[in-house]
Amino acid sequence: MAGATGPIGRAVVRALASDGARVVALSRSGDQVRGCVQALACDLGDRTALDDAVSTVESTWGPVEVLVNAAHPPPELGTAVADLSARVLADQLAGVAAHAALCARIVPGMRLLGRGRVVYVAGASMARPLPGGGGYAAAKAAGAVLTRHLALEEGPAGITANVVAPGRVVDPASPREPSAHAAALGQELAQRITLPTFPSPDDVACAVCLLVASPALTGQTIWVTGGEPIAA
Image (cartoon, rainbow, N blue to C red; front, side, top):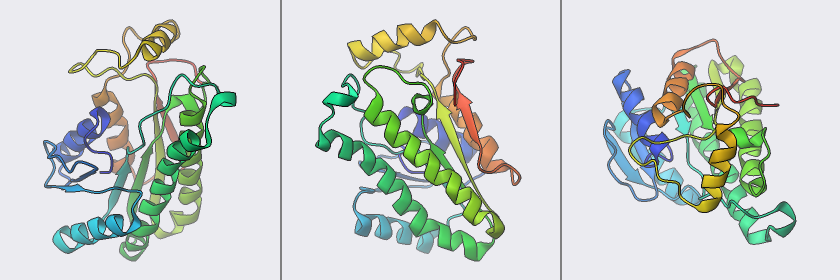
C-alpha cells in the first residue's frame, strides 16, 4: 500500500487487513499504520529507494500480489491553469512518474505469478473541473490513463488494473477543512451530491477492496462521489 499514512491510505490498510491480506505500508515517514504487517519509509520519487523497499517486501513476505497506490504530492489548489508555474506542475506530475515506477518494479513479479491486482486512487476532479485544481486534476487523470493501459496490456497475464476516483472525502476523525479554498469547494460540491453526506475514507476503502477481490473487473473506474454527477 503506497501512500499509506493519509486518511484514505489508512482506511485501505485496515480494510485489506480485515479481509485477510498481509499489508505492507509505504510512506515518506514510514509511520506504523494499524493493520499493516510492516511499515517502510520510501520516497517513491527515488528509484533506488523504491527498489530497495520492494526488495525488502519480497524478501520478507514473497512476491507482491496487490499494489494499491494512493500516494501523491500535496495538491496545489487555488492556482489557475494560466498561472501554474513549471515547478508546481512538475511536482504534481511527479506523482504519475512514481505510479509508473511502482508498476514497472512490481508488475513483472505479478506476471511470473500469473495473477495480480493494481488499484490506483485518482480523484473525481479529473472529470469534474473546479477552479484552481487543474494541475492536480491533470496529474490524477494521467495516472488513471496509465492504469487503464496497464489493464489492457497485462490482462493476458491474469493481472487486473483499476481506478478508484473519490470526490470530496470527509474524514470523521478530522473534519476540519485544510484551507479556505477547500471549504469553498466543499460548499459547492455539497449542492451536487445526492446522498446526505460526503463519502468517508472507509467508503473509498470498500471500493478498493471490491476491485482487489474481483478477478473479472479490470480497466474500470469507480467514482466514490456520494452521487455527484460526473461527466467522464
